Length: 251
Image 1 (tube, rainbow, N blue to C red):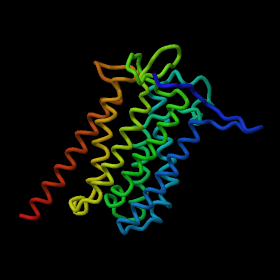
Image 2: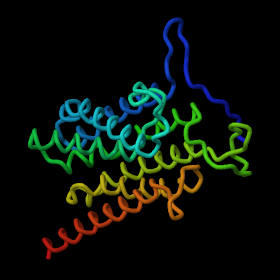
Image 3: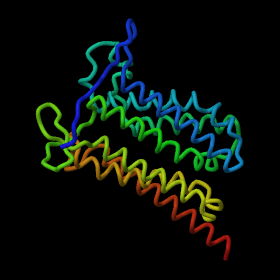
Image 4: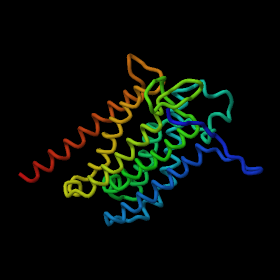
């Protein structure tokens, strides 16, 4: 058993800091810095990352909150509950879709290359998400089903899967994989493939981790698993299409 206790807030005199919110903010900050670094390495304008970041963050939070409330309408007992994101209550897939829509709007307005920047951003998303999962673990969010595995944590009087840590470890692995892929010659000629690889690999990770969470199922699978299947197939189709087009142009 892994020693475990939760901490939701830190009181500093008159100020109360929400631990999950701290890690969410750290995740966004780390993602911005890593995306800017990747943009520089790819000889892209890093200012695009800094300029787009506020809009992407707003879009991510709004999208994540909307999807969470659609999945958990019982979480709202008053008007303030609709916006109380500092206590958690953000659905990652909603945040991903919201962030993508915001970035698409920014790209269209600035008339810059979508896929070149998407490839630079992909590893950063994995790191930011990983840091956010530390916040989930620290505050007891998404702790999984009962289990007897040696690495279980004691939560609410029962031994359970430490599912936020499973995702954290998987996301760090995805980050390393994306950096490796981004340094391959193939990724330079196949714009968007690093981002598609991120979507595909995270979809596989999330599909697997969902079996250890306690989310409600519909016909045997959770909503996140259905989304993961759809995103995996879409990203795989995108990768195959890119490879096919490159092969056709080289023929």
